[in-house]
Image 1 (tube, rainbow, N blue to C red):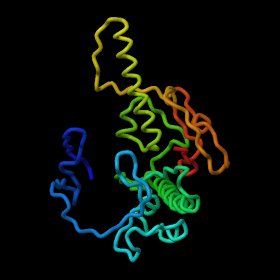
Image 2 (cartoon, helix red, strand yellow; image 1 turned 90 degrees about the horizontal axis):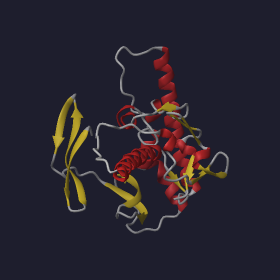
Image 3 (tube, rainbow, N blue to C red; image 1 turned 30 degrees about the vertical axis):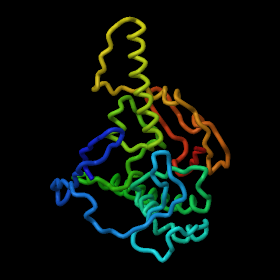
Image 4 (spheres, rainbow, N blue to C red; image 1 turned 135 degrees about the vertical axis):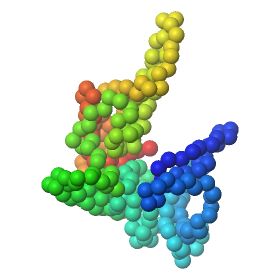
Length: 251
């Protein structure tokens, strides 16, 4: 999906129509629920907005609705899940929490490593023989450079130009928002007018952890550490010392 048009009513927001690219042409789709694609989910939790936290599977299943699956039978079918397939293709980042069983996490980590290996091979091939017309590689690990360090001084860089771990993206967005609010309150206290400039997307990387510095569990070290211990913030450079697949968040 290239873009979407949204509608809101009250507290609810939804996609009114979506634009897809088909044979180099834009195709807008407005009709909903027209595709009959069999599938099912495995879930035991619903998040605060009422959405199920689930494993998604395509096709039909012989498992009866309402069956209580333990870790072992779920692990046996996990590689068939959309969740695993997206990680294996490098289309999403891993984002682990303490509530996820280790045997399930290990399977997802293995899928992520396959994507990273594929991206590394593709990058090496391109560096050896650059393409005349660069093609978009559908693997985020081909582009993610946070392990080496990336320079960020404008929010547009992480919205339009680079791939970055979603947790870091949210931190940067919140940092930019705090900067805007700080400018507003400084103007109020000084009795001066404040004009919000929507084009001003400057963001200070060094202020990334001002809204919180949580503990995370580092799998490779088998230890709990503060987030500032696994990230380097220097000037406008941000570097993640551990791969996202090595991190487990407590909440």
